[in-house]
Length: 292
Figure 1 (cartoon, rainbow, N blue to C red):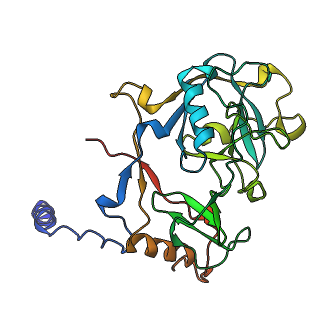
Figure 2 (tube, one colour):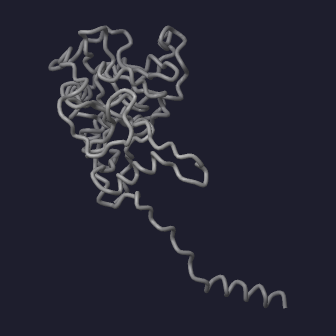
C-alpha cells in the first residue's frame, strides 16, 4: 500500500504543470538594450598573482588622457616596474610608477588639457532630485553617470571610477599614474581631476588590498607594493581570450523605470521609500557579454 501511494505521488508530481516563470519587471532590459563596449575601450590590468582588473575607458570625457593611456599600454610602459603603491581606506587605490622617475614613451602628452568637464549636456535620463554636488545628475545614452549644470557636464567620482593622479595645478597628470575610488564616492574631486574610466570587473582586487600605513595611504616600503605584470587593451588580447563587456543603454522607458525603482525601493523589505537616489548608488549596469 505504501509503495502504491509513493508511486502515485511521483506520477502526480511528474504530470503537474511547471510553475510559471516570474513575470518580467517593466524595468528589466530587453536584449537590444545591451550594447557591446568596443575592445579598445577596455583596459585589463594584471596584478602579481594573476588577478585582473578590467576598466572601461571614457574617451568621450577625457580624449587626450585616454589616448595617452592607450599609448602607454601599447608601449608596455606599465609592464616593468609599475605597481599599486597607495591604498587609502575609504578613498583610492593608486598605481603606476612609484619612483616618479620612469620616462614616458614618445608621443605622450605630459600635461594634457584639463579634461575635467565639457560643454553641453548629453544626458538622456536624469534623477528626480538635484545632486548635492551639481544642479542635476543623470546618464549618457551609452551608460555613463553624469552630473552637470546648465552649460557643462562631467563624470562624477563614484566607487570604481578611475582617475588620473596629478600634482598640484597646473599639472593635469599624464595618465601614467591612475587611481580607482574604493570607498564612498569622493565627489569633492569632481571637476578637479580627469576621470578616464570605470572598473567594470575586479574592483575587489584593489579594494581588498592591505591599507598603506604611510601618509595618505602610501605603502612605506617597496615590498608592500603590489606589482603590475601587464596592462593591455582588450583589442590587444587574442580574440579567444579577451574579455567582452556590454553596457545597458539608458534611452528607453525600461531604464526610466529602473531609475524610479532605485529612487523608491519597494516592500516587503523597504517600508519607507527614499524618494530619490545618489547617482553613485544608481550606476548604470555593465555585464560580461553572454557567450555565443
